[in-house]
Length: 274
Image 1: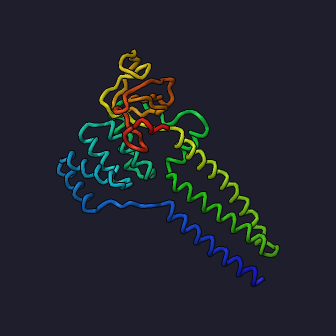
Image 2: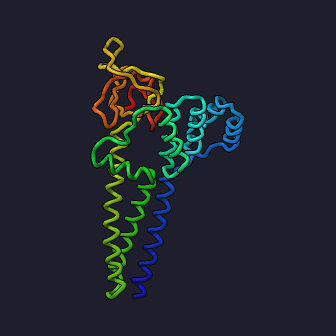
Image 3: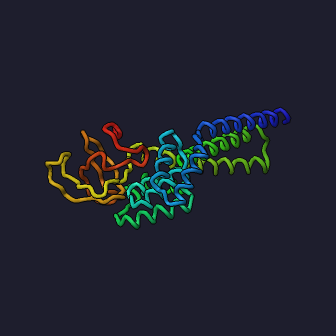
């Protein structure tokens, strides 16, 4: 009995160590220069939004992935009347910190001010599940939660093998079953997030107004126009043109590459969607 208990303790310590290492690997941080952020914040406070914007963008170009920096950048664009880039950067901030109420509020305000149609997700169960979890957890947080439940399930099953029968064993058995059910749900959620984010490229129109053509090229007929701040799904690129779809609507067309930016990766390029 003592030997089994010792094995259980050692196994628990090992699993916790591996889990701690996994968290470190899944949550890399590139912290922003506090002096630069402070300088940008001061410029923003005195109404110098353009210079504050340049500092925030410089930090992002250096590899900083910070929800506060994207949020502040979105505010500078909002104050300058660039609602497209305001929506874009509030979206980026929300991806990094989906539970922040200020980010949510400013994103909804920018959408309202832009006065453009918004549909939160494309139809389909995977897209719906991905959106539900993305409102509360980042992709990394979802992966860490799935890993934590997996380690817990492993520990519970190991305990069942090593401990004798009795009330404790019954409790462990029920706990292991519950852990497996939760793991299945979180695993499905994680899979749907990865699938959705790898196959659906969300973007925001940043040009004041852009004409949507039936085919890639200025010589083709214009079907309709989209305003700055319209959120779209990007399907493919061809030359200097991108084919888009408006989520929730049976609307597709082509717009110039430089009139739209992706939420995940900045300016759209010819190989962004490949």
